[in-house]
Length: 417
Ligand code: UD1
Image (tube, rainbow, N blue to C red; front, top):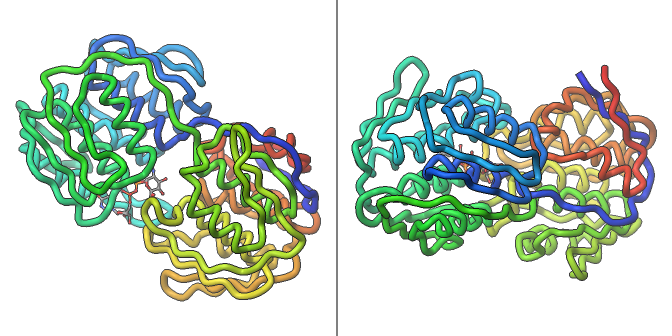
């Protein structure tokens, strides 16, 4: 298995291009199950998770052609409505085929994802909402089995804001009979991107980006040519990298409006964050001021940047309290950061981070996607050599990560172990 080796201490300087958003590309690729004909999607990132969803679509009988950034998908012939455990266990977002399959085919059998490194992450809200739309759902042998002749529009209230839950049900409701209202819907930019793609397919979705989404069902949708928004989490990771190394990085091709919560926090740490033509310029300082951070659904501070900001706080001048409210157990990176010299105490869903002058390079192990990114940041800021194993996690969500950091002057390389 590959390892990433970093010789820390370099300030990062230069420009980095941001790829398409993984979390928008996954539901958009799944939405092609709703239509007959060839869809063309642009700005698809080249990631393991994208390969997994394409494998999943192929296993359903869907044709997919081309290589990222442009991928074509044709779901004329769906000859299997089952998403197997093998595929779902490697990527929880596979659950996104459930809604479209039931809507288009009247049935779906999708493996339950099970637990994962960042908590239980159930799919009960997806299931309850599908039942509200009139599907009969059974849990059998570790699979969700859903059936419906035609889904029927209704009002659905999500107890907890769920991103993929909102996306799954929004897709299902496009082909339902009548109007569906999603209340307490997720407001993430990726939800808006999906709604726009669905609307260009002929769906009638309004309100995406607010907590109430209204979907008027239509009889059929048509294929589209559409694009994926830039990845705000990748962009945010590079902005934090500028901060933690005291560098000056132009993050190109991102959408600054999606990064307000992070930009506000980074400014409070002393960084200069400015809008430039085509992106954001992030300039760090020699000293970092501690800030408190609380993760929240969008437009709050993203949980997917919690591990990265924690790494930055671990070398800040003071005490920072980081509160994780979206996922339980999303502090797997803490143990690894402490092995690199960080001083962090976990109290329930809070991490109390006492800044130290410097981290020290060490051998570390990636535990999940965003935790891996935080270890790379730690390695970049640390004195000496850091060796990160289990980097397959990072390949799920960051395209060409070591190449992009090298472009900025980092000493980082991948070795096959
Ligand atoms: C998505 C993102 C992930 C991000 C997360 C939160 C994708 C592919 N992944 O994950 O990167 O970290 O949003 O921004 O877009 N919950 C339930 N029951 C459910 C569904 C969710 O209790 O049926 C809970 C979860 O356990 C969690 C919270 O709701 O505590 C939010 O999770 P959710 O928004 O669903 O995360 P994902 O969509 O899986």
